[in-house]
Image (tube, rainbow, N blue to C red; front, top):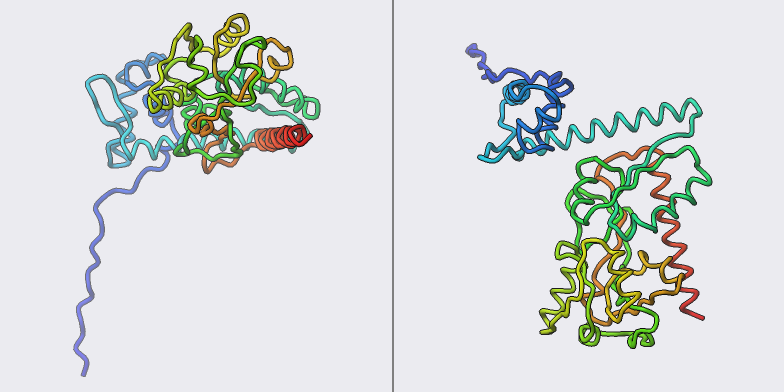
Length: 329
């Protein structure tokens, strides 16, 4: 005869379920402003509310999620691991809302949309505007916003969802980004057409450092490569002028015996004008940069952005094919 057994009691958690509505309300907007501003006070100023209101909303989020979202420091607040996860969710949620809104407009037959681009100076100044003009000949209803930043800031703005596309140069892969297109972007020595080095097919840093140099600021990837290579070779740079913008340097070398450095894509129009020339560098480090078209990893891009990325990629490939044909002649 079987002995009856006492039913086993299942232990249940006393933790209350998360109120998911909190992830869709004003608390999330206040949270994101603190992430961007780095402090409750600055976030409150931007939102035009009292700091106590921001603190209450952050506290509400942390209570509902049962975890801290920020590291509190003397000079501000930075998101911890949980805060970074929530911020990534919020950015993607807002980007998805924008995408759906554009696709609804497309269903109504409105060929419209906006493409937001962050680019380094050489691409933002001349290269991208000409590509956009070509794109808008087919899709005239698409608006563009092109803003110019340093390389690190381009990557950050793509990761934070502030722009749709980053067009930049990179030395290594960036966390949280999808590389839509990548190809080598070697650094060239740029000089006036009557410069003694202008007749050479290749030059070395050892040769060009004998002349005055027009150099970018130390925060640029180009300057970092130059400094590394010169240090390894024991070369001293004769800085005639420095600037955190490219085109003052280009204008300076066009009227002097100085030399500056740049990738070829940013120079094409100036090279056609004939005031400067660009000579490839044989030094290995000067050939390790890559041109990249970047988007946010895991994001489903709006139709206008997808279409422009494809157009830009094809434009770049066509330029490469033309360059190969010219080189083969």
